[in-house]
Structures are given as C-alpha cells and as structure tokens.
Image 1 (cartoon, rainbow, N blue to C red):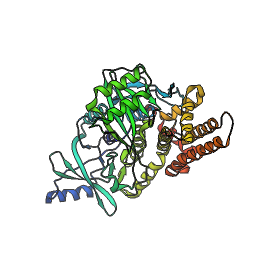
Image 2 (tube, helix red, strand yellow):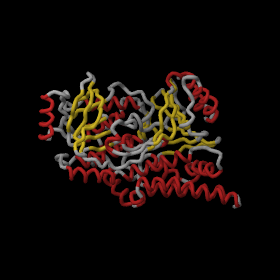
Image 3 (cartoon, rainbow, N blue to C red):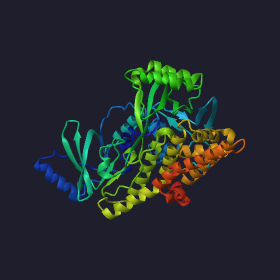
Length: 509
C-alpha cells in the first residue's frame, strides 16, 4: 500500500531542511586538531541541529545514506492533509514535474459489490479536496533538488553510526562519509529520522515495533486504469489488495500476505499465489487485466515489505528528538504515514522557530513535551483508524469478524448515508483530525454490525455473535485509547486547537 516506511527517513531529511537549521563542523576522529575543534564547537555553540536521515539563513548539512533515486513501493500517496502540510512548509511544488496523479476517491469492492467514495468538499478544510498518487523516489529527488538549490545547504552521502551521549544528554553524532572517514558532529539538538529500520532508535527511545504482515507489490507498465483518480481497495481473502495509478502510464498492484506464510518469490510460489488466490477475487475487467498483466510481465520487479506498528513513546533523553518511522508506525492500509510525518515536522518547525538557542536544556525539555501533546489529534486519529481498519479487513471463518467486515463495507458505501461516507473519507484524507469523530464512526459501525447479525430476528446464536462483535470493537478501540491517551483521544479542545494552528492555508501561517 502507498504508505510510510523505509522511504520516510529520506523524506523527512529534506523537509526538515526547511524546518530547522544546523551547522556541522567535520573532523577526522583521532587527531589532536579534531579534539580541539570539537571542544571549540561545543563551547561556542556554533551548531544548532543535526538531522540524521537527512530555515532562516543558517547553514544546513544534510547527511543522506544514499543519494540515488530510491526504488520503493511505499509512500506513494500524499493524502489531502499531507498536501496541506507541504503547502504550510513551502514545499508543495515538490509534487510537480514528477507525473503525480490526482486522487479524488476510494473505490471499494467486496463479493461482487462495489462503490466509489469521494473526498468531500469540506468548507472547513482550506485546500483542494484531492490527493496525489506518485513514484516516491521521484518525490525524494525533488526534495533533494530543492534542498541543494540553497547556497547554505550541503548534501552529503554518509551513514550515521551512533549518537554521542554525555551524562544522559545527546551531544551529536559520529558518521562515516562516502570516503570511509569517520566524522564527528556536535549540536545542541539532534533529530533522528532514519526510518523503520532505524539503528539509532534504541539509543533514544524504547518504542517496541511489531511486524503485522507483508505487502507484495509490483508495477504494471504501459497501462491506464479506467478510473485512475481512485485508490482501488479489494476486500479480498484472507487479506486485502490494492490497485492505483502512480504515473500517467504505470499502475501499482499490491496484495497483503500474512507474516507467517509469505510465498517465495524465487521458486515461483508468489506468482502462483497471486494468480490463483488474489486475481480471481479482483473484479473482472480492467482491474483484473491490469493486475494479471503485471504478474506476468514484472516477475523480476516483485518486491515485499513488512507492515509494522509501533506506538509513539516520549523520548526522555535530552538533546534529541525522534521523528517519522523511527518514532511512530501504523498499518499502511490507509496510506497516511507521510501525512503524520509532515504534521510532526510542521509542529516542530513552529515550536523551534522562536527558540534562539537549543542549549537551554530546560526550555528544550518543555518544547519536546509540548510537541508530544500537540501532535495527538492527527497522530492518534490516523493510528487508531489504521489499526482498526486493518483488523476489520482480515477475513477469517468467524461469523462475528465477518459481520464486522461486512458492516464496514456497508457503512462506507454511499447507499448507507452521505454523512457516513463523507465523515469517514474526511478522516481518512486528514481533513478532519478529530479522534472523537473517529470514535463516533467506529461505534456506529459496531452497532451496524450487531444489528446485521441480529437480523432478521434475534436468536441465542445471533445474540451471542453480536456480543462478540461488541467485545471485539472494545478490544480494538481500547488498545489505542490506552496507547494514545484517553484524554488526548476524547477531549475535543485538543483537536480544535490543532485545527486552528495547523489546518490553515499557507498564506495564513
């Protein structure tokens, strides 16, 4: 699915170039001159921020692991809310000249039924009601080009080895450049955003990641969908699959597979699985032809990636902030990882902007605490929706679970009522980051499922399964109420404050 994982460390590195500003003085480790320079750097507070994974006139040094265009199939959807955040950061033009495709709707398919759900024209959302489908690597290259166009920005390939820590305070990093030299860099603030496979996360936070499943994906070339402005989601069994247009003549096809039973690509099991299990469940016609064509033509380009989940726990160490997939992950089925990351960047940018120096430890700690509170309306809404939706889409031989799955499809369908569809699509697109609104819709879906199971008349068996649906919903929602915080999820003033500060037009910022 188009989401956030391995691509995010690259994306954040260049967005953060506009958010914060830092100076890095390079020194070869082990020389007397280096040791003197390092002390002069710290004493003089010449450096502001170090960004790992990667402005008001300060010099910026971006350390990037690999400057070649990434070839990934994650991070291929910029939701509506994400586009708004890009505009707030002055980076909206990075979506241009990459053959990005407009997306205005979600098309859903289940057991011969289908519907198309459009993003609503919301008067409270100050931006165009359309997202963008794209090649993630092209977006990354545009961000790099924009960063490098500034005279005060230096781009360099390098791999950060570890954080420099003294008495519980992170002072900087040690990284290896493309020439193999180990370089030491000091700064009062280090931002870690090196992705879901972060080798620095454990040095800063104690977030525990969980592998949920895997997505297998490939590109069908020289193809145009009949409805290229929709993300096509098939409620297939045992897990969903998606089809969407990423360029004017390329279509992404992806299917989710269980983590404990991944077919082998090398011996042909994956191709056999796609042809015999997935393809027959895709609606006949243009979608099925496109999916099958890619299987037959793109055998060497089939890729797999893990879907991961990781709750965001506050980093208690001083001198460091963790962002992106190194900090918080959710199931990619709703394709909102970039949106959450951009929201975090925008919040942090606004918090850092008036701070004259990050050497003030007390001030920095207060700033970081504010960051974790302010981000909750967007992050909690997206994290909860991703968790619940991914759970509901799992097809197993359980009457209660299937009742929830069927009710989810029916609830989203436009025939069920306009406010249901428009409300859920506004939440999905980041137009309405209100956790309480999401809770309301989840309760409605649960009640719909219970009513469906009790129809046409109650019986002991049906009553039992309806109670199991209720228990299942409590379990799914309760887990995230605990992770995200009951107060942050249910108090509406937090969401109102977020909307007022961050859901405005770029000109209002």
